[in-house]
Image (tube, rainbow, N blue to C red; front, top):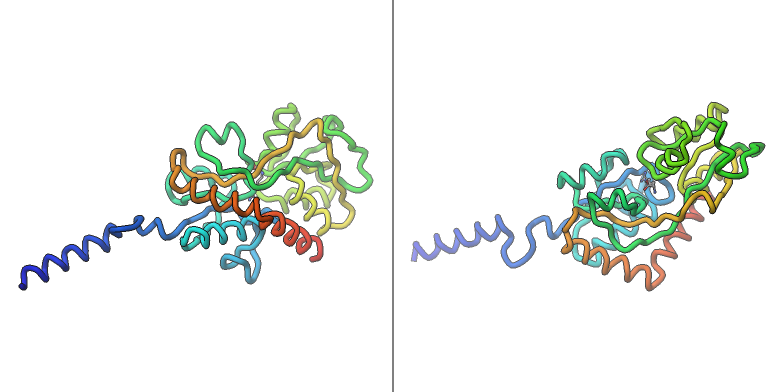
Length: 253
Ligand code: ARG
């Protein structure tokens, strides 16, 4: 009798350690990495949808967790560090307004895209820049590691890279640079927050970009869960509603 009890206890202990019958402990939680310096997709606020984090991406992450019965944890880090942290296994997925590029696809897998964006140029209201080619003899600011940096690099222009969008915008506002190349919705937010700025588009110079969630290469189990949830939110209008809601909130501020 005593032996049976002990054996049972051993089985229970083993089950707790390996979480028998279900996924590992990790399976019931998902840790996303983000860089919350990218409104309206992710930013820090007093009461966000996930702790202090709010924005379109944060609302999407929360729903992915709800759809899959997983607790959502959010880790904040520099944009540059996100894919490294993902490859290290420090985080399970990246949700950061991240454009699914071929270069990034070499190291990670991307979900079904959930948002289409493009790079735009933010300039002073009285700027004479009307096309990307006009940037040739101007002082250009970008944000380090963003696709905007890659675009300007590919155009062969020299530029200065900043850690945060707000830093690049301050340079522009203070007249220390002539143009900031940045994703459209985030650019719109900064233009409405700062007087004297406008957006210049050049569809022939900047290709459209698609935001997607990144997972470790080969993590199809998690990717399938994320995709099912994202595809549902695309089909039922949830993501569209979130985009409208957060864009309005951003411009109303
Ligand atoms: N879409 C751009 C890229 O993928 C910028 C993303 C910046 N996102 C952020 N959370 N800071 O490079």
